Length: 139
Length: 476
Image 1 (cartoon, each protein chain N blue to C red):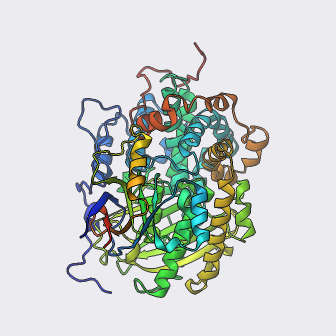
Image 2: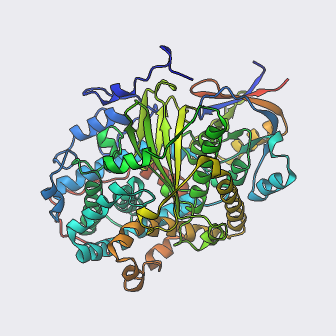
């Protein structure tokens, strides 16, 4: 296994190991733009929340992998990524940082740091473990 | 693929007396039981909290008890404690999901909770007056011979857990009410919930968690007619992929049409089939005519509901536990049951009141056209939603909760039009309208609500000697 950049909840265990360039999506317009670009399948999607509506068309159109900065497998995005069989790592934290997400106690700097560190990196998702999903730097 | 000695399901152990079930999370619950042993999730949690009840309301209840109009204070407190734990059990992990980026769900949720607690009691009382206590139980029982009905676990649970539990909890947290305010109204809401759920289950329980997370409500002959239409396939085969892809896409649209909430999804089961496989029946409500934004679903010609029969091979996934929880959602250990689906069938119900005889089967080979319609509606609804301002999003979401949670019961009782016309159902109460400006202050929606409502801290009991007739008389 290569360098593990981030870890979080593994939504469901799968041997699928999608690889792509992480793209941080901050607004619905980003999601629509990515779909219209025709490059949805080239990216691992990084989002802040664990709700499902924000990524709705991306999931429906065939997103290959998802990383969130909050939420759990019981969250709506967790449920839907399982249904789509789209590997998903939730509440990911950077292995190089001590900052962790806590409901109601996490300021924007936590999310900004994760987006800054991961956006644009080529990675693959390792979702073979029952509980822990890993974001691994691709060769 | 066939089961081997390494692939052997153990989930039936969960149904043996004394089995504590698995833990699906590490957290524990305290609620109103400070100083006592914390309560876990799942089967053991249900057993522990029931053992602390003062009344028999959490055990199997006889019909006479359900028909009785008045709960005692002990019964109200037992229901309050149980629902608070049940809410924590199903939602504490979901509630970690943070901001949506699309729909301000925490904001619309808390407004709806409080609106329901204020407004539902007189509408539910009117409905009970119209059809009688037995009529309310019959509404619940109607779900035993139907698919594509919103008289389901999540809607029925929401009457009490959300309208009473979360609504009262939110108003207590906002210090708008005290613990002994609105007792009569609390009784009205909880009686309505108990009658619908009891009529649906007919085993004396009201919640799936009381029955080791089983929601086996359908009559056998009705189930047989569904199972007869199941198509069997191999995991990862083209029909498996077509079926599971459609399941996911339709489920996603059902979430989106219901503003990112669980009201669009309704699972029942698990039903054990003669060959040992498990059946889950899943309603996916992709076009709710009560919502004006569903016009994009109309444009695509989508039905009110798709119902999927999912046949799961428990040995193939070495199933250890399966829960159909009280918000109609299936969770398993191991988590990935999709890969163990070995059969399925799809049905469509065009309108909420389409007769069962007119519900039709869609062969798996024909799902491609339906998938395209679902995807088109998803994109159009997303684009439409992304153009809405924050206030519209919050009030639309509020309506999804406040109206849709009791909509199926009012429809079947024939009181929906009366509720709209004479009780101004779709108007927003001035108190709740004013709370719109309060909920973003001091992090009320994003911090206080998760702490009080989803952690179970804020469900204060009624006083032992409180008067069950009490409403609220003083604003001091």
